[in-house]
Image (tube, rainbow, N blue to C red; front, side):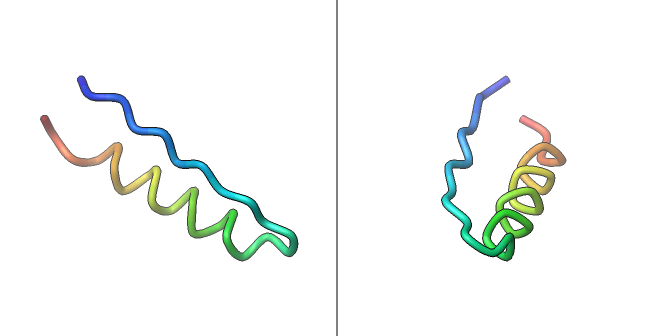
Length: 31
């Protein structure tokens, strides 16, 4: 299983929410 690093900097939390959504979506992809 490939490993993906989602690296972010967030002052107000908006980017953090996007990063978590991207990580969740990447985890759903098989292969």
